[in-house]
Image (cartoon, rainbow, N blue to C red):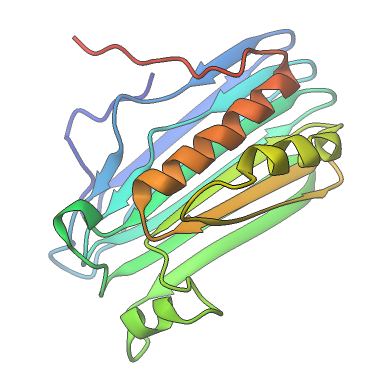
Length: 231
């Protein structure tokens, strides 16, 4: 289980997570609560580097509780997944722009959230989201259909497996009729990607959990998600 003793991430902070799963080994990594990226007092950007490596016949689930980016925060995150042989990895993240529950909109700041997947040492998929208040009106840009279309929350679910494409339909069925979200599922050789957007964080989170539960079957696990107990 992941934990940040500081309670949140400030501009200029540098965090790194590295997880390696050996052969014939299953591992689930999650957290106690959503990570909070606080408003940056300067132009310094907080960075989070996530390196996930799965050896042949290993199974890794990387399912943190999400990230809340406060208005004015500056965040740069890179998640790198390396899988060997018949190893498998199920990874996901829920990104919330602004403290939506208290009516805070994300009007300024910087976010770069990048993903990369390598299979047996070869790049199989790369994706990067960049939002920057260097543009004239970041809030207007976020409302356009070509950008976020008014969404405040973006969820990503990635399954890396040799048979990833066979899980496209189960994932789509899990997301079918999910309320208050826009979503899609597609696959490249060895990589399945589901993306969910919406203006209500709880709705996006709920749809994301539906997708994760459906894809847990790829590792032979129950559809229920483990609960994290706090003391």
